[in-house]
Amino acid sequence: MTRRPERESSLSLTRRDWLFSAAVSSGVLLQANDRVWADEEGVSETPHFWYRLAPEGPYIDSQRDNKAFGFGQGKVYLSEDNGQTWSHDAIFRDADKITFSCILGNGNILFATRTRLFLSTDNLSSYKEVVVEDTDGSDYRTHQPIDPENPGWYFHPLDGVHTWDVNGSEMLVWGNYCNVLGGAVPINIYYSTDQGETVKIAYSFGQSPTFQQPGAGPDDQLGNPDNPVVCRHIHCVAYNPAENAFYACTGDHDRTDADGNNHQECHWLRGTYDANNDSWEWTVLVSVNSNSRYKSGGINFVDGQLYWAADANGKNGTMPHDRGIFRCAPADLADPTKHELLFNPHYESANMIIEDDVILSAHYAPASPYATGIIYSPDLGKSWAQYDLKEFGQRSAIRFHPKNGDGWFRVDLRKGWIERGEVLFIKPKPKRQRPTEP
Image 1 (tube, rainbow, N blue to C red):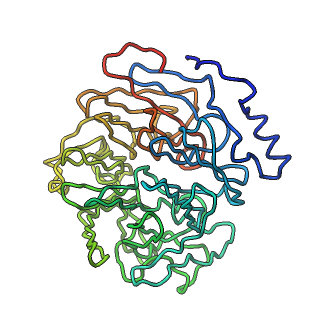
Image 2: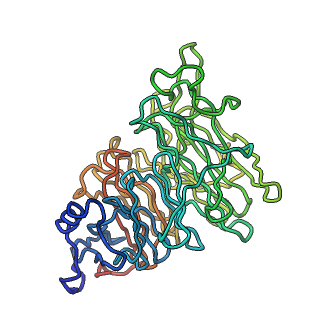
Image 3: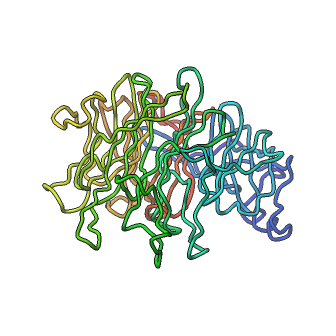
């Protein structure tokens, strides 16, 4: 463990201060110029990277360059120095219900609770609700839940990269990972071409017979009634600039409905966007059972090659499970004989990010003997290491965000698999450098 240089103690805010301030002010925690310094202790290291938990204070939900968006105690926050201080904030009573956020290239911030989207265009001085537009141009309204306490997670993603440069303009595209906590919800791929001002549906999955509200009648079915493709949730959406195409993969299992019909939930889709007509064309490339390398996530494209992490499970196929980290040409995705297995961690893994030749992935904690298992390659898959960060307990690392201006990846640590826990930062070490303080 290493220490950071001492800073003025009068400017630090401890966890005790955080909770006390919240109690006194009934949620109005920090003024715009109040400062929260990053934790001066707690940096640990492996031979390949340094790591630390986020400092006490706002939950850092997303980052971009030197900006970070956080929330907590009835407010939302924006930092312009990677979470060292929080120079912008706003009262937001449903802050603890936030499930998604994204900092756009022009500085706009799009964030969501379980069922509502909001946009700030002025560093949180104000924000407005954004109503999603359906594929036919009408307002897409969330359903009226039978159980008001379980409205579903409409906008929560499992991955952490959601914006891409598409033909010279930034596009925001993501899918919701849902039907785990919080109630039944339809599964959609969303997009925006105007920095979050307008959000539309790019693809809507069908009505799953399994994931509906308890007690729901025929008129309460969630999903697109005209689409026979069903799934539990979306694992990842990613863009391949070499093809000018998006890829999406879903989970989780084979399900048999009350009439004995089998429904496969593991799909890979390829979508192309026509900017002139503001329209999408989607093709289902693969539909398989859960004991397959196609039950996966962590889609990345590097130098025209497709990389992904497979978390195959179940007993409906050949054992051992067909899992690992794979690579192939995009055109060869449907042909397993043309896939290259780069690494087999032997346990389920469906999250991954690749940046500057570093591959960062992780174990699914409930299915692994690792407490907090990190999978790491410093050289685009030529060599590999696995680390167990046991000090954090049983945690699954998800929602990997690209490195910030200080070189740190941001990672969610989830309790079990999906319940929000802590935020972890990981900073790769330069190749062949001896362990030193970052």
